[in-house]
Amino acid sequence: FTTTTTPDGKEQKLLNIFGKTYLADDFTNISPSIAERTSRRLLHEPANPLSIIKKLIESNFPADEYTVYDPPEPAVSVYENFDSLNFTPDHPGRSKSDSYYLNSDTIMRTHTSAHQGHCFRTIPTPGFLISADVYRRDEIDRTHYPVFHQMEGARAWNRDDFASEADLIAKINSDTLKIPSPGLQILDSDKQFDKSENPKQPGMSPELCIALSNHLKRTLEMVVGGIFSSIREMDPASANKDQVQIRWINAYFPFTAPSWEMEVYWDGDWLELFGSGVTEAPVFDMAQVPNHVGWAFGLGLERLAMLLFGIPDIRLFWSTDERFLGQFSEGKINRFQKFSKYPSAHRDIAFWLKDGSAPEDFHDNDFMDIVRDHAADLVEDVKLIDKFTHPKSGRHSLCYRVVYQSMERTLQSDEINALQETIRSEVAQKFGVQLR
Ligand code: FA5
Ligand code: MG
Image 1 (cartoon, protein in one colour):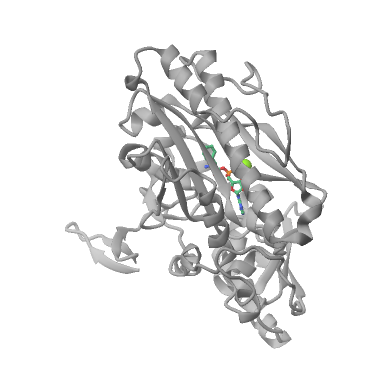
Image 2: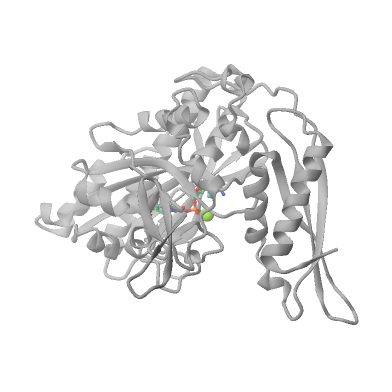
C-alpha cells in the first residue's frame, strides 16, 4: 500500500499489485499471503499433478473444436466475475466475506467462468477450455484451500448460421455423440429439464433445450470416460475401477438453465466433479455475441487430482518438497506414496465477543484470514468447536481450534506458541474481542 493526497486534501490509500495501482476502498480485503500465491503458477509446472490432470482432460476434447485459453492475470472486474454472468446486484455470492477484493470494482476471480464472456467473444472455434487459479475465502481443512484451480469449458452455436431452428437442432443432434462412453455406469443420464426442479430458460423451445442438454452430457461423459480409461491403462492398481459410476444431479447457477452437477462414486463416496448447464441467453448478449446458444461446465482440478493420484491433503499441491514433486512426471498418473506425515498439535483460542454483538456477526472467514496471514501453510485445520452464552451477562463466547502441522518439517512447540500468540493478539486487536 502507498498513500496519495487528492486535490481536496483527503488521504487516499493505493494498492500496488500485479504491476498496477488500485484505489483502495472499503471492499479491499486481499491479504499478502494470498497475493503471494499468484506467482507460483502451478498449472505451468509440467510435472505438478494439477497440470498433468489439466493436460489429460484437454486431450479428451477434439483439438479442432476446443481452443485452450490461458487467462493472463487473476484479477478481473466485478462485472466479469458476476454481472456478465447474470448474478443479480444483491446476490449473496458477491459478499466480501467470501471473496478477495482489490477494491469495489476489481476482484480475484472466484471462478474461471469470469472469462466466459471474453472467450465467447474472441475465440474462433465453437468451443474453448480455460484453466486458472481461483480465489475464495473459504474454510481451512484437507479439501479446502483459499486458492484452487478450475477448468472451464464451453461450446456455442450461432443461430444466424441456420435457416431455421429445426436446422439448428438437427446440427446440434448430429454433433452429439450417439452412445455414452463405455466403461462408465451412468445414472440419470437421460434426465431432462424439469419444470419445477430444474427449469429450462424462458424463450427456449423444449426441443432445443433437450438437444443442447444431450450434447453437453454426451460430451462430458465421453471426457470423463476417457480420463478413467487412461487411468486404467496407466495404473494397473486401479484395475478394479473398471466400471466407474457417475450421476447427473440437478443444480442451480445464475448463468445456466437447466443446470447439472456430475458426481463420481469413488472409494465409497459420491464426489462432486463439476457444475454445468445450458448457457443463459443474457450471458451471450452481454458477451456481445447475441443469438448464440450453447453450454458450459466448470470443474475443480484439485478434486480430480486428489482422487486420481490419491493425494490426501490439498496443501500438498503447493509443496516444494522433493519427496512430493519427485514422485510425478509429465503425462503420467501414478499413486502418490505417502511420506511420513510430520506430527500435528492443536491450540484453542476462546474469546468473548463485544457487548451486544451476536455470534452470527462474527464470520468464520475473518478468523480464517488471520490464521492464513500469520501461519499460512503451517495450519492443517481450523474449526469452531464451542459457542457459549453467559447465563447472566448474556455475552457470547466462541472457541476455535487451530491444528498446526507442516508438510515439510516437524514444528517445535515454541514456534507453535509464538504463532498462536500472534493470532491471539491480532484477533483481539482487529475484532475488539476479549480473550479468555
Ligand atoms: C462454479 O464455480 C461454477 N462457475 C461452475 C460452472 C461453470 C457451472 C459453468 C455452470 C457452468 P462451484 O462453486 O460449484 O461452481 O465450483 C465448481 C467446482 O469447483 C466444484 O464442482 C468443485 O469441483 C470445485 N470446487 C469448488 N469449491 C472448491 C474448493 N473450495 N476447493 C476445491 N475445489 C472446489
Ligand atoms: Mg457447487
